[in-house]
Length: 317
Ligand code: ACO
Image (cartoon, rainbow, N blue to C red; front, side, top):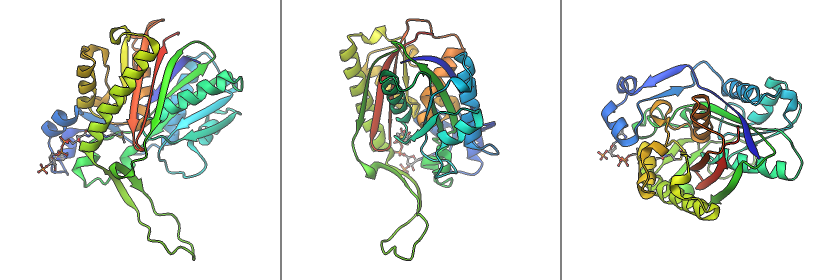
């Protein structure tokens, strides 16, 4: 597959660190130095499906296609207001496409999983033009009285359109079941037969454990992909990494002995937007004219699971 169009949509509400100081025992200084985040965009009056639809429309337009040309939709999403139907299905109707659609939940790595699935579908000849979306509202999973978590996240939707071509050089997906370090649990509807104990709880994260695992797993994925492709670290124009924390990105850049100019970021403006962070950043780079034909881009993400997903693509647009 190769990427032929990108799009993104952000919520209108900008929440700065100073605004959080108004109701949390936190400070701009703490948040900036620990995470690099200065502000984030939060869902307020919008619905996530509206952002997903806007990102999808922009990506399809950028690809020079119409919704009728899309023959499969894959949407990475962890939560939204609907448990069912899937967000991909809601977007399919909203853009006026008629193709099959499916949701993927691989937490923050979901966009890379979706891209990999799109590649398989194109290789098998089952689809020509696929809309790959990531739309997330992680700010709805956290306790807004818990300063250690709510300051980290932001909401948004990013999308790409892919078609047949030689844009995917290699990819790597891993899953290591490790529920204790990051999870979010919701109680389901009761039935007369439930005898087990059930509960709802906002997101739990062991930040230090996630930090270490993220740096180690992302660095390992990057090394495996560079070895596999025969590319030197300096031959990658941009490392588009999951935007969870600037210090994680900095640690990976140091490990690769590369200048931070190879590591574009939006975490300072958007916070951690879960699986949407990579397509949001990719669209920013594309629309700012920073991507040229032939550029090699390495994308690497990690998230709850623990899942990781990474790939090297060549920009062919
Ligand atoms: N403001 C002020 N103080 C705070 C805040 C806050 N917002 N949050 C925590 N603190 C305090 C803590 O209470 C603690 O105080 P204590 O020493 O008196 O107990 C102190 O700051 C240090 O807290 P730590 O948790 O040790 O801070 P740390 O340096 O580890 O940074 C952080 C925390 C930013 C969460 C870091 O561990 C991290 O980024 N981890 C990775 C998180 C991540 O990447 N998550 C996403 C991955 S998966 C996904 O995207 C869903």
